[in-house]
Image (cartoon, rainbow, N blue to C red; front, side, top):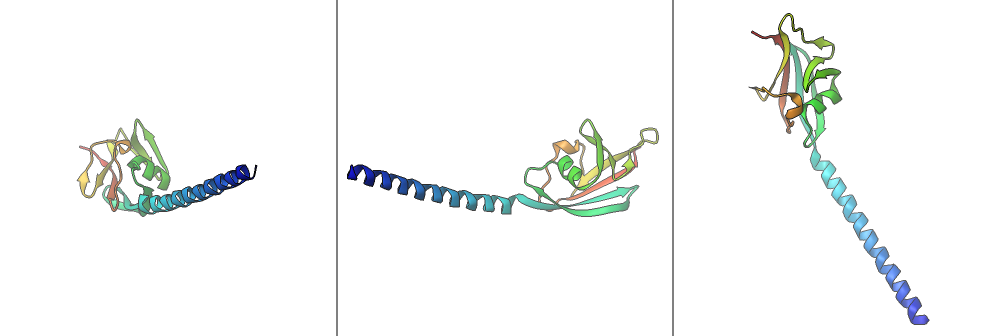
Length: 130
């Protein structure tokens, strides 16, 4: 009986130490992940090339441009494309549409298809298309 009590006590002691070790490791991993996944980019809004607004925004690694802009600006969209930002709407009759550049490169995809990267310089411009 005494042996059984010693073995049981030993088992619970080892289980307790193992549980503490996993918790500490998991907490350290979560801290490490949270420190490395938050990134920043700058988003500038323009209408006909004139600046309306500019923000430096934080986002998590892997976020799409649509997710990032929706979190930081009042937007509306259709079929993955942004149609209205901060009250400034596209006008199909006037052929005025939102386009965007990332790091001075014009992007021909929808905002839901683009992954934002650390230090990206993003410019949305509402302008007439030819």
